[in-house]
Image 1 (cartoon, rainbow, N blue to C red):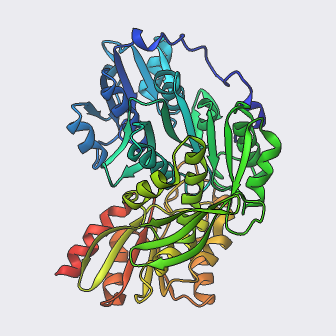
Image 2: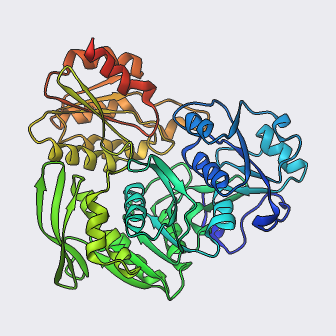
Image 3: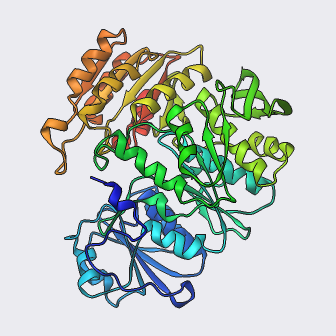
Length: 490
């Protein structure tokens, strides 16, 4: 579990890593776990910056394997110390690696130059820029993508790294030529040799915190430990920077007491919020609103995304973008052309009259808000929610009750049984049968099956023309999206 002592200035290490040379002294980079979303994007940044890049992963799988191949990056499938011979100038050790990992252990015992993902991002790409970091339990991927897009549309050409693929560019990263670098700030740990949250490495000039709710129960002992991570993050900001806080969330507002930066609140319910939205209207394909800053209407904005949570994300971007010098007209233009993030209410297709929608939601709050947003986007359709509790945190017993309440707005709910992994403890593992029973008792018919394979025939018996099949998972869910479309087509 992460402890407050891990947030000290010096990283917590179990060995002394060799010092990392200046970026211009590095030519070749090897990434362990390269097919992960973040690691693959970091590999793309290195490649775009002119470095020789290679990597390894347990299994090379699309879409990341395809994107890496398109970039000309060699990927070795499986792990082997031979992948580090001859020795690369730098080894990036993914946070899924344990000290006994064959490649990580070889790099350590042979004193190769090593960094974690966030260390490398800061060392090679954030220094000398204005890092704009988006943190929060929910909404940070969409908010990061939205901010990067707004800056790009304003011709500022920022660098960026997002934990998802932007639909407009089909990319999750760019080196950029401008002074800004936009980063999604993850609170997960950095590496086996550095248990600090990733976002403590980024040293933002300015930052957004979208939300705070207990998450990552596999590494944070409790809510107090989780809050301390965010307090350390905002405490790392300079007095010249701006900290943008969700004014409708008490825990987020409390962060104002832990930073030297200027603070500005955004929100819909807090009278102290300086940036807010009025005249909010649901329209086909999204929503419109009037942007108000300190009580003055400054722009009418069309946002091609549904849901209150996406409206809040937009207000966060407005707040920071205005402080970075964008005009309200530039922001409105950027939002109007933003096509969203892949795997965030992404329409995968329609067959047999059933619309299949993909979403990354895996925390109970994200599941609830995604169902509501999809219902608002397609109010005439029945929402059938299909969920895979796959992440380390989502499989924890502590979330049984929140998941039980997350499906209230769905017409039907289908869950796959969470996998029990080597790092799980039986006493802390979620009982999916209990969750499904409680969902049913709250008024939403609910079904549990052991896998995507077992869910597919059951879905075909319950789905009907006009439905939205909302599939939620932070993984591939066994390819259920396309398999469902193919079966419906047949």
